[in-house]
Image 1: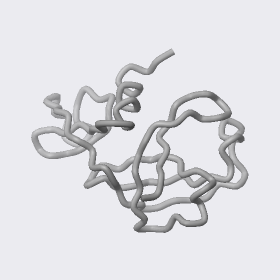
Image 2: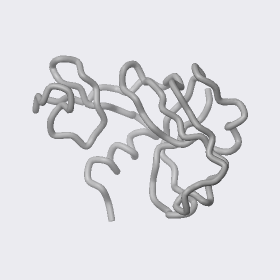
Image 3: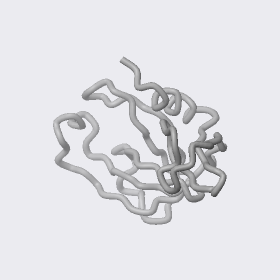
Image 4: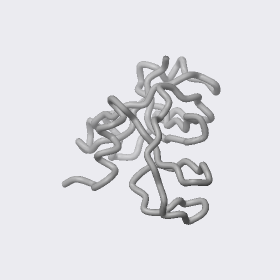
Length: 123
């Protein structure tokens, strides 16, 4: 089963990542039909910067069952020039992540559920 718009966006993260923007310059992530900030239906694709900055994170040692195969991992919110992404940073990097760390976004498969998700890597 695919999630129209979201799966296309995940595919793009591993190459030419993008976000949506309205005429007012509000950035958001697909799938969207209107800007979540101002309601404008006029959205265009903009290139997602290659790297973002960690704004906050939490390290998870006791995961929910759907993430059992990922632990320990960090749930990270990163800023990509005004567009925030939430994703997972793998166990190989949880000891090195800190606020302000540079990250790249890509798509990965959750080992437990076999579903796709955003996975960050430190730069």
